[in-house]
Image (cartoon, rainbow, N blue to C red; front, side, top):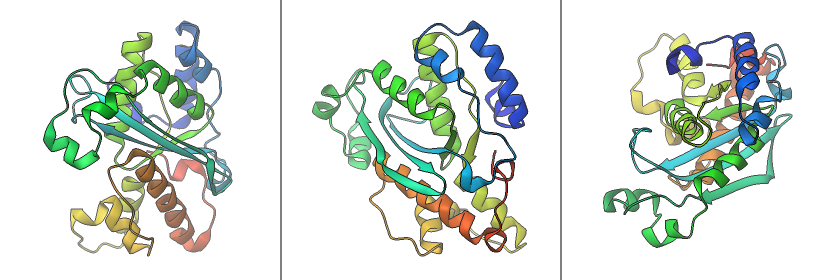
Length: 234
């Protein structure tokens, strides 16, 4: 099944697919992740356990590029849990491109001291179990995490996902007024909600920034009415 097909499954479809994958998953981190049911689609969004996640990568193609760093932080009952924060550089193969180093500030010497991919993915799956993944622009995190699982475990899991870019786009489209695509950037959306500027292109900083943006979007949507999870899912 293609990635876009998976992204558009209803949550009931995610649960069914999770059970099918669980039946053939190898023992280890992936099976442990798949053993935990996803949140019910009718749960009010403020009660849904969420994991805000961000990756820095060596490029945009998950099949040929590599995961360079990962950062995440949990949202529990509408509050960001800073004690759950995690940031880890990944020990990647080969030399890094100088143009990319300027952006993410991760040098060859730093990544040589990083953790192995298997260790980082195990931490990610452990933190993500029973939660909804939160990202800004889902394609990067979805494709790179799925590719990493394919390499490590021979199969890729399915994830229910909230994408703050899509959440904001739905809101802006309802106004039926023109807007520039740049308005959907993480920094631009944060500014529109009067959230402070953040140091971008650091995986943990961007995960925290995305978590704050979701809470701001939820707070301003429908005059504070608590909508269910299914309203926010991809």
